[in-house]
Length: 377
Length: 78
Image 1 (tube, chains in turn brown, red):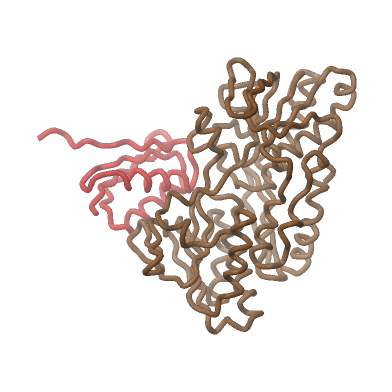
Image 2: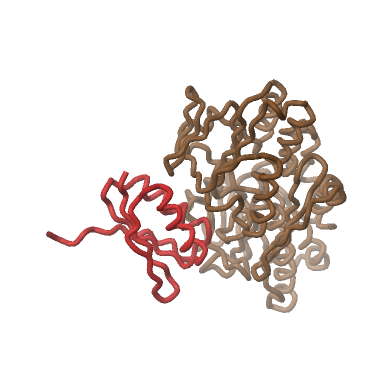
């Protein structure tokens, strides 16, 4: 049984390590083989970028060597896939090699797509890449006051990022004694302050308590960098001195180019996690089209379920459980308080009042992540 | 006079905010006066989309549910 994992992010890495542990005997007996193809020899802890943007983590802390994270039985190549031959059960890579498989797992992730809004890329600060997060921090350091707008596109990675950056910016300006010179304004594309209704019910009074203004049903149309204003599809305007954006995301280009899914999101069965119409192709994390959060936690819990199922399929010829839609997201509510949202397909989240203890747990998880990636946590 | 041409935007199977995002993208490319019919199987979107249409100032032509699919008709007016 040849298992080929395309993508070395959180989902692919947890799956590979979890499977390697479950299939120890099969891997050593030559009955199973796990191969991973990735675009990079480094693994980034992406949630850490939020802290880089506020000067609380250094970019170097976010990386580990990908090979070093993987169980030794896993064959690993830095050689991104360019062509998917699903009918032939094979892929072709950038180097020109062909890899065949019995089971394919696609976990290529997502990317920001600011180009959909004219002027956004040139005029907004982001924190979704190392370079942009560092640049954002430098802008914040220089900022002396004015109107700060947080503008959000959909869909995007990390559902809590818009709230977290807003609350953390509030504390950042407070600590620097700038609160009386700063006006924070939050915009969100749908008719409430967060897509998860109970999270919105918690966040909206927090905004009101802190004096953070907000506009919902605000979909970015264009950014005028000269007039310093964001115009919305709805006909309203948000003037800014500093524009922070969570841009809309797309799946990876290779997914779109191969016709596997519109905008790079692959149609996926919500319980079995197989690509619709394909029994031997599975999809993890951001790459799915599932109506759940695009978050590392989603990829993590999906990978746990899929590892158990793939191992069971090899051992007893049948999957043993469904993915239940489980997601767990921390929500930083400032510099030293946090809450969390835990939910699945059946049960919506119900965030509790933020505490220091949950923030400390999040801070610890920023380090414990590497145990998760190794499939230990 | 022939019947008005209606462009169907099929967002069935997509969940909030998918249908609204789909409608916004299609309206961006439409001409003033065009009528679009959004199909959505998501109940939340069936509530959100008319609120959005009202905020933007397009003309809401109607919303009805048939077999679990909401048909929301809107005319682009600006």
